[in-house]
Amino acid sequence: MKHDLNTLDRAERATVLAALKLYLDLGMDEPANRAEDIQALATCNGDDTSLDSASIKHLMTRFADDPQANEKAAKPVFTPDSEVMALLIRELRYKGLDSVAYHVEKQHPGTLDTDHVVATGGGCQALFVEIHLGGGKALVVWTDQGGMSLPEPDDYMVGVYYGAEITEDVLVSIEGPKH
Image (cartoon, rainbow, N blue to C red):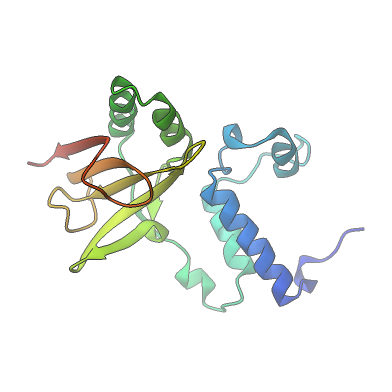
């Protein structure tokens, strides 16, 4: 039996919204990151193309209780250059961190949005991307080269760390192109 989504109560909408957020957080907006049963659900058993990140985020705004949800929806902030991402993956592999490289490649979004902005103290901001590894997490952090503000296409620094916070032990760090 099919139900009209408009008849969902507040708790049901909140549950769908939470499930969509988890779906994105786990990188399942990328078909390669999905189990077969989730892929079948996302594509109506292969009859349709699954939604991309932007479409899922738009769908999330439709389930939000807040009437201004569309105004508060995540907005694009920074799109890492594909060559920089490829270099980051190569550097991780070069250091023998093949598993981290694999998960970064599969889970790192193509565009970072306002949901990724994190205050790092002292009025500074960075973009954080949490990467789920088999038995833990890695953190990809994007800033300007001074480490004080959000990255720009001509002024960025990216670092990869084990865990969910910035530490002294950076696995890989890349700066470019401004110096």
